[in-house]
Structures are given as C-alpha cells and as structure tokens.
Length: 379
Image (cartoon, rainbow, N blue to C red):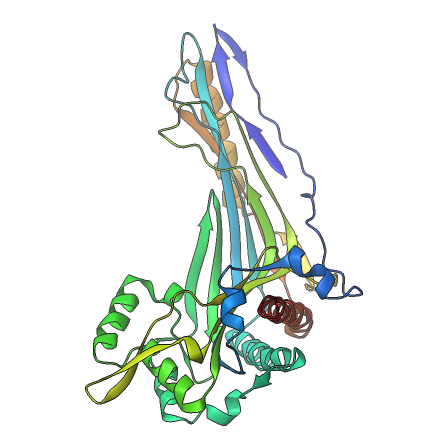
C-alpha cells in the first residue's frame, strides 16, 4: 500500500510530511472449496426482492445471453487536496498524487473467446445440476429468432471500462462465438438509441429474445461474468469543491483472480405480449429475477507466471522531477504545487493455468447464483 500526505509550510517553518509504506491489503473472506456452496451463498451472492416471485413461474431454462468480461488493466489513484479554506494564515500546501497500474499479459483474444464459450456451456450444466430442465443452446442456435438475436447487437470483443473514486478497470467483453453483444450495459447511448428505434419496428434484441422464448416455450437466462486479475483500492481523489482538507491519500493492490457477475432470469409466463403489424411483440420486463455478486469469488490457486514491477524510467524521472519542483515551490512560499508518483505492475499468465483457475471459480459463482435463485423460488 502506498500512502502520501500533503506537504506544507507554516509560519515560515518548512514541514515535509511525505510517507510511503508497502503492505498487503486486508484479504476479504475466501471461498472454501471444501465447504458446501449452500453455506456460502449469503457471503458471495444475493437475490433481489423480485426473485422469489419470478422464480415460482420458471419451468424450462435457456441461456439467451452470455457475456464474459476479462479485465486487462486495473488502476487506482489517490490524491491530497486543499479544501475551500485550506490555505489560511502562513500555511502553504503542496499536494501529492499517487497511482498504481496493473496490466495483464499472455492472454490473446483467441484464448478469451475459447474461455467464454467454455464458461457459457458450463453455465447450462450448472442449471441442470440444480434440477432445472434446460434447453441447450446447440438445439436452438439455428432458430430464426435466435439468428436474428445473435446479430442484433455490437460485434465482440468490445472495450468496456468501469470505476469510480479513483479506481478504474478496463475490460474486453466477449460473448458466445458467432453472436454479438446486446446487453444494455455495453451498448452506450448510440447503441441504446438504435435498439429503441428497432423496437418501434419490432426488430430490437428484446423483440427477438421474447419471440424466441415463446417459440421454444422457455424462460430466458442472461448471464454476465467479470474475470478480474488484480484488486486495487483507492482512498479517493480530492475534489475542487470540497470544504475540508484531504491530507492523506492511499492506494493498495495485489494480484488476485476474482469472479463476480449477475444472473438474470425472465419467466416466459410473466411476459406482457400483443399483436402489432402482424407480429407478436412483448414489452420489456425490468422487474426480472436477479442474483448478483456480493463479493468477488476466487479459488486459492496461483493463476499467473510472474508479477513484475514495470514502472518505466520516464515514470521515475517524472516522479522525481515533480517532487523536486514541489519542494522548491514550497520553500519559496509558492502554493499550488504538486507531485506525482506512478507505479506499474505487469502480470503475465499462461492461458491454460489462467483458464483452469478462472473456469473453476466461474463454475462456483454460477452454481451459487443458480442455487440462490432456486432457494428464493422455493420459499
């Protein structure tokens, strides 16, 4: 963990309050592969309030959408900052910003696609293990509505990023081979508008999916799985509008393969449908059954070949230069100066090892999500 505090001068005396330390972040509860999944459900997943009602109407399940997000870059930054009344009297502040960046190497798009196809196929087995009747994707992939659904979104892989509070993850989004990504979370504003216009003509992804559900007499399962390779946490960045001073900033991180995601189930019996222009159409049902990760799940097995500090010479020169300027400005009584420090790590994986560990952890997550949904439906 890297920690910095702001530097300041007060009443003519120079006080340098810069500190750095390294330690492993506190580990979250670990998944126990020797314990039952049922005993760990509430630790790793939770079902929303609609799940209990919706699952009672479920009969035969079919996975109509399956997306896997592979993290390729994870970063976090934190900074000190002066509040609106930070510099008062003879106090002059010098701020600091620190960043840690983790990058994944050794996994190609071909590897990611193969892992995605395996994860989606194994999800069908998870549904069957829980006792549900399952319509395999292989049996309906050539159905006209499935063909239309498969081409109704954006071509994979997509670049997708999430993050807040100084922490950011970059992902590559894959779906089953021969299909496009049509989840609303990945379409963006333009893609969402395109789907809205298509819906007016009955040709949106949702239209094709609901007609497929009726034609096959199945309930739809939509699955999103995120595969992270590093855990990075930030204390956050100071804001220009803040009142109080931020005098301390910290970033912590380590290499940790972690699986999280969400499973959504849409019962066919709950669809609201009608006839329009000679076509059967159904309205989108937002209140579907949902089981979401509460905590990332990982198996306690090494997944990478190497983790190296890949901070560049340029990063180090920039850090030293900005610190020197910050100190000089402070000694000269000039406020508004700042220093920047960046640390980079490269995690290199072997596709076979990474795939085995990620696949096992993903199976555990999906199994738990299915069991959590089934538990709610039986209440």
